[in-house]
Length: 287
Image (tube, rainbow, N blue to C red):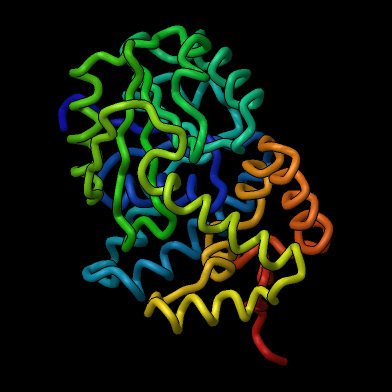
């Protein structure tokens, strides 16, 4: 992996922090960027939690490798400094088209010409963003599943402008950080994973928001009837409710009504999922 040595991750939310930590755990020098000192403090907490998680769940992490990974991550709120020496920039900011476009317009003038840009967007097409990158031939999508240390897929999807050599470099990089690369041969909103997952979660939300069944019962019937380990609302809590909310908010009228239901009943009450201690389920320790 001589082509990529220094990795920058923009955004340290649930998945952004995992991407940064996994890359550092795999031996790469990583810079994690956030927009404010307050957000950086939250990122530090996420990385501390990930050290504990890896020690518990990843073979070999307890011998000090997880703690070493954390020390390999540099945190900054200076975008220029974050990308100044990056070989690869992975963008993991909120799933809002305008936010991503504005960020790439800034990046285009800050990063070296050699730097590859990759979006971790869950549903947006890289073609929606390529014109803002200043380097459409070195831009593509690189999408990870949540809890990447165990659900270790990396979907790689380019545009008609993506250099095939850049595509191959990202396939190799994915393998180098312990992922199973999934080449997506044509642009598809949602890639493979979310083309399956998003309609599933939306159907569950429709049942609960419409008053047909409680979230716990929707999960229960799915687990019992299919043998799946988790139901859709348990998956929601792992993902965090903000990303599904953003996706629904940009959908049709019905999707927007589901977004409003999520916001009113959960997000506005601070119930954002596991990361906040409560979502559709409570994860707070009992008194």
